[in-house]
Amino acid sequence: QVHLVQSGAEVKKPGASVKVSCRASGYTFTDYTMHWVRQAPGQRLEWMGWINTNNGDSTYSQKFQGRVTITRDTSANTVYMELSSLRSEDTAVYYCAKKEGSGWNYFDYWGQGTLVTVSS
Amino acid sequence: EIVLTQSPGTLSLSPGERATLSCRASQSVSSDYLAWYQQKPGQAPRLLIYRASSRATGIPDRFSGSGSGADFTLTISRLEPEDFAVYYCQQYGSSRWTFGQGTKVEIK
Image 1 (cartoon, rainbow over the protein chains, first blue to last red):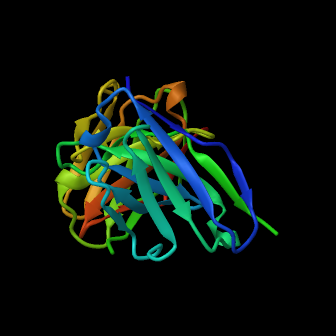
Image 2 (tube, chains in turn green, cyan):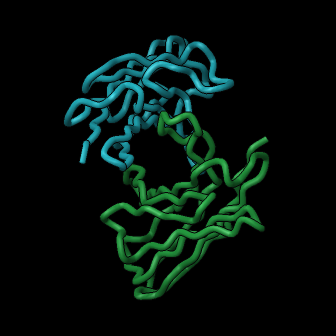
C-alpha cells in the first residue's frame, strides 16, 4: 500500500527558507518520479517541480526557478522540497505527489499536505 | 501555458441528482493527459479519472469522464453524500502540469 507522509506544519518569517520532507513507502522509490504541488488559500493547485528519484535530476516550474530545490535521499525513501526567500504569498499547503509510471502524466498518490505559513 | 477553466464555480444539487462538470482548455489538450481529482476539506486531492475517461482504481462507476480537444466533462451519475467536494481537472503539456480552479459540488 502506497503511503506518502510529509513533515509537519511550519511557520516562517519573510525572507527565510523552509524545507518540507515526503517519505514514501509501499513501492520501489526509485521507479517513480515525485512532484510538488502547492495550494494557496482559495487558489487552484499549482505545480512546482519534480525530481527523478533514480538519478536525482530535478526540473522546476519557471515561476519558482531559482527559489525552489527538490532533492532526494534514496536510503530513506524521502524527497525534500526547499523554498527560499519566502514571502507572504508563499503561505500555502504543499503536497508531494507521486506520478504514475505509464507516461500518462497524472498523480496517483498524494501526501497529506504540509501547511507553510509565512508571517512576520 | 495552457489555462484550464472549470465551470460552474459552484454546483448546488441534491443527493441522487446528476452532476455535470466542465473543464475547458485555452488550447487543445491531449486527452491522454487530462485527469480529474476530488478534494474534500482538509484532505489531499484524490485521483478519479485519468486519460480523460479511465477510472482510477477503486473509483465507483457513477464517475465518468469524457471529452477531447479543449472541452472535457466529468459526470457523476447519481450523487452520493460522500461526493460533495471540490473537483479539479489537470492537464500535462510542454513539460508542465496545470490545474483548473475547481468546481465545488455542494448540497442543495
